Image (cartoon, rainbow over the protein chains, first blue to last red):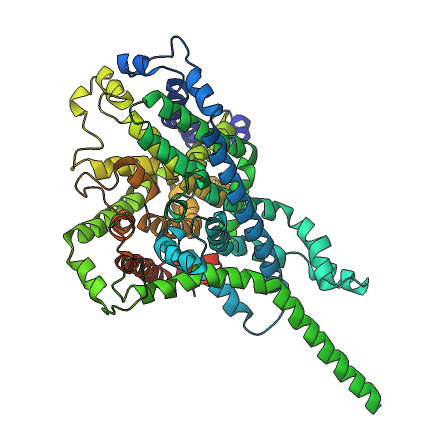
Length: 292
Length: 312
């Protein structure tokens, strides 16, 4: 569009209109960008900075830079066992949930995309219908189910349901992806004497890597952020996940705002760090879901 | 010849057996996990909801639909339904146009676009528990928000954001928007990138203004994505819990209760488990009814849409 404008210098009515529109839109873009940047980044920055102030500094003025910087809030938390326990539990549960969702989801998606059998579409629909039943609504019935299974106050009592609830979106993204891989490839592998399971494990899965990374990230983030289910399932503090830890800190240290701020900042850090690295996969995942 | 036929039949049978075994290995574990933890709880929950049960001992006190009657006769629950529907409606009416506008802007080429996409999406990956604690500190009386408003000359508008019964629901909505707006933006951006540039260029060459190109070309082509966004947003809003619970626990006096916070307080904290599952089943029916209606009137048009195939 820009070249069209420069190629026709004696601008006609249309040319000026287009140019003027890009003149008004570009500043608008930057203005909106700055507003979004402010609204998003300032609260995060506020928490990180105020975590480095003492409670006395906080009560003196709501808006000020730390002076002097009080690193002891962060130091106390980082050298305390609970923080690392919460972090470890979150990582363990999210790891198990992700491995199960992606592993079992990929196997099922392979069966539902590249085998022909009666009831295939019905089973696929059954999986996808899980999208109608989010884990937040299921939590209390799930609690009773876990009680029947003897899985209360147990890390697997959180990880297994989280994996199960990640299966629908995993199938939704993986099945079309696996379908799109040419059948000739599979025929060639079978002619060469490979079994279908070997074709799946050694040829198809490596080819699906982008989609697998996306569904793994979705499952991991969902588990990492889950609050209600662990809140119902865990009673022992040494089993708590990071979001539950934030909740506990908020109610235990309500007098010491600076410590809550520092803890919140530290709890936000892993998610943000992983996100910086993985952003493009999440966006690709959104694109995959849109295209279906 | 008969031997060959028999061998052929045996081969076919063996291949069929083998296929059956492969399908069992591939599908079995996933199906068991799904049936055991997604579908079974609905059945278990529906069953428990017909009893009066406090979490101890066997189910003996069958009360039929009594729990459901109590729920709909409890003004607090009716209010929680209203709040949930208000939050859902606000999400559609405010977050929708907002994410669409921002997605359209970010879809243009400009310096810093990559950074903006990163920033816009960041709150979505933050644990809602972190978001809630962060904002409840920022919004406390005399806190950051109040100070900023005072120094901007808007001190008269300062409220008890989390304690005023007329304001608290909308404060919660604002924080929910902060957390989830990025999701809509990214979904719509992905949809925008699926629209061939040629279509918009052709319209522009034919004399359409940028405004017309957006309204007549881009938006109709983006409609399937918008409908999927609407579906995900409504299902998500119907179960909203974390942020409300951590900021206000549904209070003060139930002024920010959602169906889920009501379920947690009355069903879990008060150990009226069968009553709580009745609430969960009511929430599920809301989701189910919505998706049937949505499927019938909105998603049906997307013949290529993934959810159409899924829900149909």
